[in-house]
Length: 611
Image: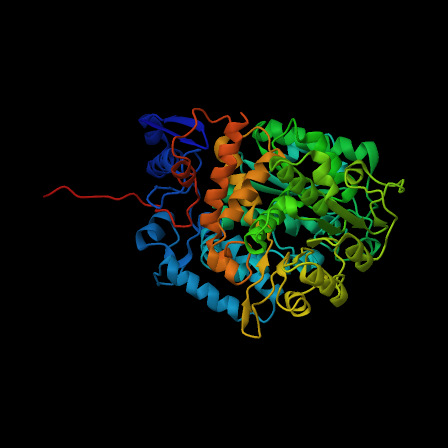
């Protein structure tokens, strides 16, 4: 007997031929023959191939049997298993004699979730659900994304990372330490999935606005990749979270008996660089040269340097730099429809000159140049402050990226004085400096501008430069506000505002989807500019009427498809795409690749002959 299957996914084909001899079945007995046939069916029909795994009509015969089926999160359906599936897979009797559909399961999960008293307990419950039933977890996330986003990601994920040593239950990614140098490829082979297409990795040095959390930063790549699926319907099987443990300079963590990482100061210098290089090289060797490498929450001293080192030879991006820049620029472009001017009319002051704000400034510059300004003219309209004051010519401590925005002005350390001197139209904060946007500063912005643009982008909420309520109140409801963490609806004086959240989830999952679909070999800033432009165009007049400069989060799956198509279009324009020929209908092409949360049948349809 011979079984053959052939299919394609993300531009890659796959063929499988399986054969066995009947005499082998006779020699090993009927049970062995049945198992052999089952394995053939599994290889022919299951998601082990690289074909489209997304249709709920696709037959998937699990290789596992009995209790092991229920222990495997990507196989377990719980009480949604049919009677036939329970009997065939050997789980009949292991589940209650109740048969419910996935929709009912979602309602049960929401009831359990709503019974949890704190966001952290809700986070723990969702993690346990993902460990039990993967498709149900993502169905829940899909149906209630706006409600669950603050739990699976910022702000709750920050607290989860701080307590990760206590919360850790079972592996959801790989932990690779500096002591594993020379053996990283072997560790990658321990990951049970061979067909990885995206690796999100961190060294834990700058987790959100919380600083160095070392090995406990694993919650970030796990959460980011959950959003790949929740926001852009990328198959979770293709995603690998990794923490690179080089130690931590957080002495409190090193002395904590609950800490789960290396208890040593961070490794720096050449040894660190060689470790990162071996890791990226090993990932390419294991998963292919086009595997997407997503840098996440690296410290300032490494983030730009590593991105510059690998940007031209690796399919990679840094979400803290490029993703934040793209979503912030999208908000600024959206605000232009409220302020009724052009981006080249704006003058910006940035509080903070770390990777997030520098990334935003660089992408704003790229957009201004596209609109007709020279590079220097664009940079001249951007003023930046770091912890030591304004970026001025007289400073000798500026990195190359900071020098791009330095000015012939005295070093000023007071933000209010800078705002009075520069008279910016837009004020952007990403310095993790809570309450830095004071009443006096926002009032000054309002005196100088009819509709001042004020973005408080620091995460989590406790680090925000101001709240939405403060911004609207002090500006007398004139400010165009956006934030990095969510704030509630605000009403006063008959005005209603629903502040937009400049959440990177609008960008990085969609960019990843687009890159994976077209096989882009690199991810330059132009792709993030295309993503920002498309995202801003999807803000409705209804959104703008309540001060929202981003599309509604509940529509993010649909938004991601359109943003991914814009990224793909730009990749083909720049000759970066490797899926050839270019699909005629990009939207249909992208939609055909999306992961479905629907359960797949485990038992083939049968029929009888007439007697």
